[in-house]
Image 1 (cartoon, rainbow, N blue to C red):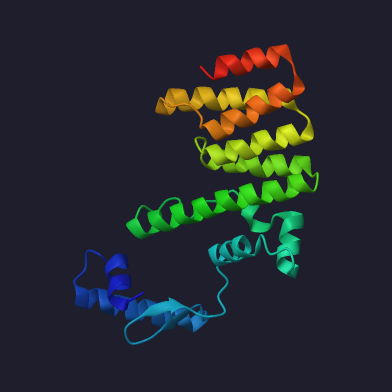
Image 2 (cartoon, rainbow, N blue to C red; image 1 turned 30 degrees about the vertical axis):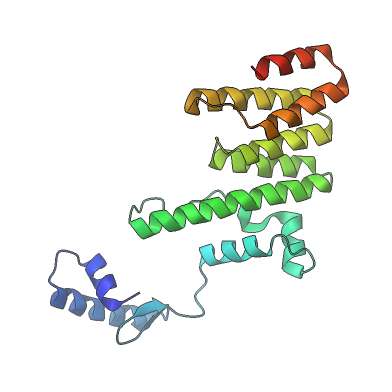
Length: 210
């Protein structure tokens, strides 16, 4: 980040000259005790050896599906930091922070869905459902997350749970958005009901498709 931008952000009410002077003083004092920053003539940045939790999360998200690597295999076992429920700088409202926060949130939701699907494939139902429900909690209207939850219930043999979750989501999107679930989700639950040949489920399916 440029020195000018840092100084303007930290000392927004001062003149540019005074702000730049305050920045030089702050950097000198900070580097007397720590070496967390690298300051050049025009830019200020973190030192290469500084550990940043967001970078760690991003690295784990990228490695999640590479199960042929040690870190990928480890993540598939534990979930790593992807499962941590934390937002990026939640008290900040600067435009760049808002954009980065949303980018990280979207990546986490995709990662949680992938993790849930991987765990379900291994029969780790509890962990799979927890990861999928975390994705739902990040965005309650996200259909792909609900589809993963419903798919886990069906694969585990919990048809009633799947139907109940579908119905709750159907009511939610109708109330909040005035729309119905997509045909992809509706057909998933309809096929499960038909396959099990349960009259009550067929009746429920007919009602939810209206």
